[in-house]
Amino acid sequence: MASPARGNHVWVGSETGILKGINLQKKQATNYKSGDAVLSRHEAVTAMCWGDPYESEIFVGCLDGSVRLFSTEKGKFTESRDCLGGEGPFCGLAVLDNSLITCVQSGLLKVWRDASSENLEVQVGPGVCRMRQNPEQPHRVATGGKENCLKVWDLHQPQEPIFRAKNVRNDWLDLRVPIWDRDMQFLPGSEKIVTCTGHHQVRLYDPSTPQRRPVLEATFGEHPLTALSLTPDTNAVVVGSSRGDVAVIDLRQGRLLKCLKGFAGSVRAIQCHPVLPLVASCGLDRFLRVHNLQHKRLEHKVYLKSRLNCLLLTSREKWEDEGADPSADLQSDVKEEEEEVDEIWNSMEVVAAKRKAERQPCSDVGREAPRRDKGLKKPKKIKKAES
Image 1 (cartoon, rainbow, N blue to C red):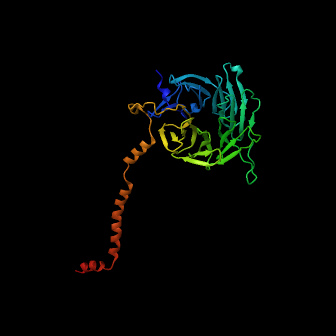
Image 2 (cartoon, rainbow, N blue to C red):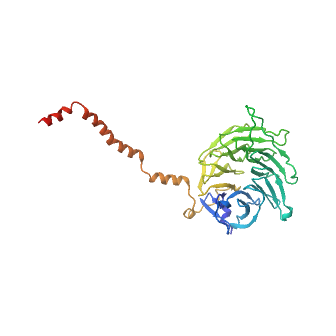
C-alpha cells in the first residue's frame, strides 16, 4: 500500500526545519521531520529538489549544512549526509547522474559523488542568491547573486563559465547600475535564461547570440523581486516581490499581463505547474497559496503555522480524480484564512450600531443646552423664584 505522503500535491520547507506535505483535495497538511532533528531555526529548510523524475524522493537542504533524503513512498526521512563547505545557507540543490549538486551563499558549488575524493568543487563567486539547473541539460547550471552577475556553468568543463552576463549600461545619470540577481530559470527549447533582480527588474538573456547584455528588460513595482517561475506556455514569467506583490510578465513584449492578489508578506518561492494553469507560492506570511493563472482566482489558501522558505509542486495532472475523504477534514490540522476571518468577524460586535446608540444621547443633550440659554426659559425660572 502506498504511503499517504505520495498523495500530497505540494511540499513546503519551513524556517523551523519541518518538511510539510499538503494534500489540497483533502485539505490536509502533515509535518515530517527527521527522527533526531530538533525544531530549531538552525535547521531551517533553505533549498529543496526532487531526487528522481518519478518524484518519489526529495532532497532537503538545511541551514546546518546537512542534506536529508525524504521518501514519499515510505513517508519518512531515509538518509542524511553532511555537505559542509563554504559559508552561508544552501541557495540551490540539484541531481546529476546519481550525484548531488549543492551551492552555498559564499559561492562554493560542489558535486558530491560516491567517493569523497572525487567531489568536484567550483568557485562561482561570493554573494550567490540562487543556483538553478537546466532541466534539458542537467550538466549545466546557472548562478547569480549580489554583485555576482549571471553565469552559466558546464559541470563537464567547470574551469570557466560558458556564459557570463555583462552589466547593463549606466543609467541616465551615467551611474553604474548595481547587480543583484535573485532568481533565474532556463527557458525550455532554447538557451535563453530569465532572471529577476533585487532592483525590481526582469531580464531575458540569450547566450546563443554574441550579446551578453539582456535582450529584454522590464520593471515591476518598486520592491526587490525575490522569486520567479515560468508559466506552462513559457511565454510569460510569474514574479514575486519582498512586499508580497505577484505579477505575470510577458517575455515577448516585456509588459505586465496581470497581478495576483491575496498576499500579505514577502514571497520566498514560486512554482508553476508544468501543464495545468496553476501557480503555487509561499513566504513569510505562513500561507501556501495556489492561484489559477487564467482567471486570477485563488484556488487554495492554507495556513501552515511557520514561515516558509521553499516549495515543490507535483507535476501530476489529474488532481480532481483523487477522491477526497470527507472524514479527513475532522483530523486535519490545516487552517484556512477565510474560515478564520469569518469566525473573527462573526464574534465581533457591530461597531457602527454601538456608536450610533452612543451618539444619540449626546445629540439630545447638545440640542437642549442652547434652549436653556434662551431668554424664553430664563424668565420662567426667575418668576418661580419670586413667588
